[in-house]
Image (tube, rainbow, N blue to C red):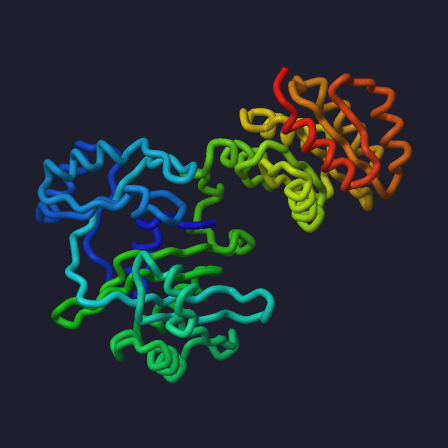
Length: 379
C-alpha cells in the first residue's frame, strides 16, 4: 500500500526525520486558511499515489494565501496519470542549497534490503541514474544487522552525503522495520544555507501482508486516489491493475497473467489490464472480473487464459457461464482453457453457444485472436 505524501511525511516526522511544517486540505477555501497559518508563502502539492507530479503541474509555489487558494482550486480535481487529486498539501517553503536522495527498498532477488543514495537528488534522479549510474550508490543491507551507525556512515560517505545524514539514515531504517515497509524514500533531502537537513518529499510503501499486525493502518485498505476501476476491483477483492491497451486480460496466477500480457503485446495489440483471479475462478469472481473489465471503454476484446490445476477448467467454464447470467457481454470474449478437465470445460462453453464467446486451444493463438478482434476496423 502506497501512502500519500502527507501520510509519509507524518510517519517520517514521528520517527525523528526533520520535515517542514505542512497542512493537508480538501477545498480551496481551506487552502487559504492553511496558508495563512503557515505564514503566507507556501508550496501547494497535489496528493496522489504516483510520481511525476511536478512535471504534471501538481507542485506549485504560492506567494500568499490568495494565491494558495487559486492554486488549490486549479489542482483539486486534476487528473495526474489516472489519479484524481482530492487533497492538496500546503508546506512551508524551504530554501535548498543542495538536494540529496536516500532510500531503502526491498531487493527480492537478493533476499535483502538495498540502500540507494545520491548527492544528486531532486526531480531528475531517474535521469541521473540512467545517464550517470556512478552518481547513485547502492549498498546491500543485511536485515539481521540493519543500519547501524557504522553502516549509515558507510552509506553517507559512499554517496557523498554530509555527516548530518547519518542519524536520518538510521531513522529511515527504523521506519522501514517498525512499519513493515517495502520502500522508504526521501527525495529530496534538502540542505539549507544554514546547514540544516529537511525531508521535502517522502514516499513509503507498506507491505499489505503485514496488515494483521499493523492495526493502526485501519481494518480496510485505503482505495482513495486509485484509478476508479482499480478502486472498484480492490473493493471486490480482485488483483487488478489498469493498463493503457485495448485487450482485457483475465488469468489464474500472476506468472501466467504476466506471460499473457507479453503475448498479447507481441500479437499487435496492447493489454488493457492485469487481472489475476488466482485459484478462485468461481462464478462470482468471474462476474466481478468481467464487470470491471467491460466497464473500461478502451477494452475492445477480452481474453481469458486459464491453466487448470487445483481449480479445474470445467469449474472455470461453469463460472463463465454463470457470470454471463449477470453480466451483459458487449465485446468478444476469447477463452483458452488447458490443464485439468480442459476438455470438459471446452464442452461446457460449446454448449453455451454464445455468439460473442470464442475458444482457442493455444495461448499464442488465443492472444492473436483477441488482438485481431480488438484492432479490427469498426463496422
